[in-house]
Image (cartoon, rainbow, N blue to C red; front, side):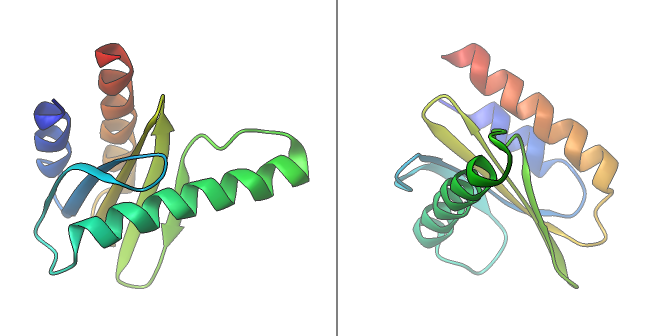
Amino acid sequence: MFETVIADLLNVSGVKGVYISDTDGTLIESESNAQMDDEMCAALFAEMFNRASEILEKLSSDPVDILVVEGKKGRILVSKVGNFILGVIADIKANYGLLRIEFKKALDKMAMMM
């Protein structure tokens, strides 16, 4: 169902994995170059998004649009579309502007599929 969304994101240089789950963290679809458990990643992305949403709601009553976590070696982007969570793992050297643009396009594509 989400093959084109995943393929488009994987075409961004530096993207290591794309994961789509339901809001409970059950893996729907994924593709990854990283040596990680896809089901575990999907569950963790859902947990990250849900927790960040709870925190932001308490702080500002503003919903989370895109959650970005940046480390020394990598970057994670997570967002929610309908009943789905989209998570991406990218190398820190990936062009952040391009990654964000393609991530938003992916979210729009997912929204149109519903």
